[in-house]
Image (tube, one colour):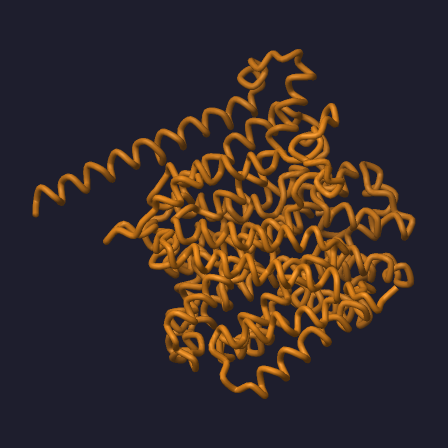
Length: 509
Length: 105
């Protein structure tokens, strides 16, 4: 009850014209930044945090939270329309979003993405309001052994995302892990495959790698396909029929379990520092595919795939503030930038924040909930504008997107080395697409590799190389058992069943 | 992984589930296209580094537009010239980022 009273007071403080304008402005800017491949909400936050110095603390945080929300979902727009994810986490959205566009249903795909984003966001904001205070005690029990087990569990995604060839999926993921080892050793700072290049001391950066393999390779493949088909006046599938682009409430809410599961996954991932939005998106997609009654439809244009990804990646945004506010530990780079914004305004995140700045905290919570409504309205209006891009011929839009990729990678880093990496990974991604290797598995391996290495090495250092700690700690044991179960159930057992089914059908013929 | 990619030939009914018809296997035409991409992207990168973003991207964009099938050369020229200039101005005024160019300090 006390919490509701505080929240009510927060709404009263936050529901001002100035605050609403900053929220709406933040959402619009976030969507625009998210649409540009390589830029995303993190770059937008980094650039705009200093501007908030002149704003009130509430308006500043509301503005930045709006950018974060808009940026996370903005990446889905090019992913759906032209198979070019604006942000790495939107790569999973493209798996089902772009096939829907090819079927002439881009509006339906974008509505699904938007509504799922808002649902996931709202769920995690509610969890933030409820859990921010009690989370402090639970978060302190998660240590390197628990993180090691969670990341090992995350590798089981490969079985769900590798497609027909598990071997190729594992090879792609292993290659991704190998690429992630380049750079200085995180413990003893020895150089690993840096080739004496200073630019590689921090390892291969994620943005050029992800945009190159996921977005640029798709553009390259489509341009070559355009050349081959010789359809000089080809547009994309177009807007399709009005009926095809409707999204009945029954169809959307018919997958409420997927939405809830993905929102829970995203909230859980967001609460744990360091795991990232991309991981939440892929975990949500993998879990939805495994739990679906029609897993064979995933990757062919099912709205359930879009719902799973968007609900999960948007749910990270709110829950990221749980460790940020409760412990002063940023959940990811975006949360770290928000901490910077807090400190600019004299607010120090941590266990005392709720006590010393309780009114401000609840006003921020209220602003976040209002930002979801603004996101829904602005996003819905924006869909009508964005979908016009579908009518622009591919032969114009694809080359221009190539230049956007150049710019998007150069802006955050001011480095032509990153642009070179973008181009190299674009070529690599093209080869992988043609030879049937899963680019998504490559990116998962690249994301999880350094996390696993850091967590495992910390575990070994803290517990004197005694890895039995992974099975003696209860939370860690739970995740390891889940890993074994998923590998057996969805990996080996699923493959044996598929082979038996194929043999039976051949025998029947 | 490279060997597997090299020996991935298209077989009827064995196209990769994730990419569908896109996974056509790596044959000689695909290696030619890879070579073309390597040349074009390398030239664009070197042009950006040693000349500048706008000139390199104008040439690169024009070439890609024509390759993709644009036959309206006036429209091609307008898009190829306007896009890099607008984007570099956008980068400067929004992100305070100066794109490479030998005429810039």
